[in-house]
Length: 78
Image (cartoon, rainbow, N blue to C red; front, side):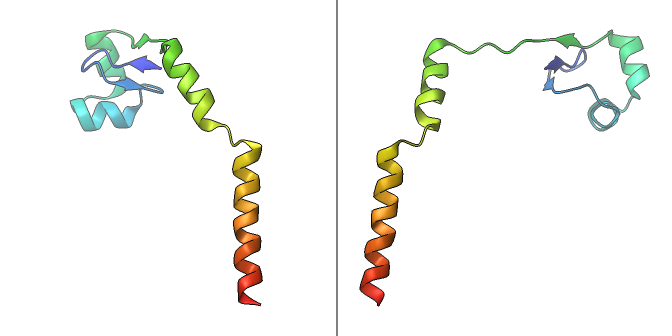
């Protein structure tokens, strides 16, 4: 991620659209006035990384319960 040198907003890339809409400058003018955007490597704490791993995984039990629920609803209708 890059940090805008003028406002400090984090961006995937410093774009002409951001420069025009936020600062009324072209990208070249903004870089000339404030300097190059700073590359920022986002860091996550171990707790956040663990939470992402644990919350993103669908376990076998989750899948089996959903399948059983669908089977029960299908049987009741017919």
